[in-house]
Length: 481
Ligand code: AMP
Ligand code: ZN
Image (cartoon, rainbow, N blue to C red):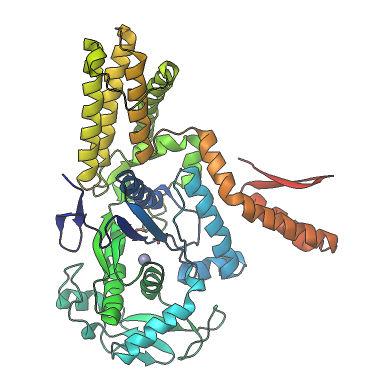
């Protein structure tokens, strides 16, 4: 059986066939960097990470693009409240996003495009839509003419009358039709802006993703990912813009991640019921949080609770003990040697348990990335091994080594077996060049006796839990908790 993916567009489980044999392109809607992320945001980021890891496990070459929305109303408003510029706020929260997600063992995407670095591409796409009669300019803003795209509503399956009823809530006299949405917003006083053929302004959120996805992955993407809240209007509008401009399907598989909830309600910034990912990571190892987040299928809502995290913690203890014990028994094995005839009954029984785990794991992940069942198959093998170890019943080291390798390989896909040192090493590897650059800039400021800049860099890093230490041999940095 091959991989099957639930496509929100067809609302069916579909056979997965990428457009270019062996290669998969993925675009995942990333964070709006106005604040630290909570573990609800982390769920969507983690599902992206695991889908990518699994596709690689299956032998695909994957190109993953995940954007950062670094200009929008929330960023402008919060920066205003804090008395800093929108770009400073977005920059700091972008760094914090990478730090938090890397602590959770999320591998960086191949490209993390920022909206503010793709303004030219957005302007070009908007111009194409204007030229095709699919957009119109009013007072320096550009609106998408929903009526020009006959397939509008195909993702959310909303009928025009439902859409009209919803859109009428906030009437904007400048729109031809209440369903139309802005692709370019004319600048308001005091807001950041860019020059455009329609005057100074900034892009709308939907055009950002259409442009960045097409720039980095081409006109048709294999998988487009995002949280379930993005299905409408964000993804519906991305389809309308992109498909009208290119005339080809924008994404072949639309994957939407269900909400992480708390007390039965969606975890969200506006609901003020969130747990920051960095707070959770200060209390629990990354593998525990990952285990909790993958304990439900990604299309099912998952409820956050302390008890669930504690359950994950004790499950992981069993897993770690098992893997650590197996590691002690590990020997070098020659994979090419056929040892079928040398197996004891106990060996043969463990071999079939290992093979069953591998089949069950693949079957679960092939069924629309069912991580809950995949974890179950791993833990079934763990119990079998633990019993076998306790019984000291003569399983050969050779077979324990096979079990060890099989567990490591499958746990690696879910990222539920990794020690903290690995995660910190990854974080350092990613941040090191950026921090070295900051230290150089600070040193340069100090040489010029520009103490304000030097102190600002030190203080702002402290806010990100990074402390600079000045020694006689130069400056170094370390994480503080
Ligand atoms: P935002 O920064 O609000 O644009 O969200 C970034 C990503 O996190 C988007 O893909 C959202 O759909 C997703 N997201 C936000 N809240 C939750 C939640 N409670 N559970 C799962 N995903 C979420
Ligand atoms: Zn998006």
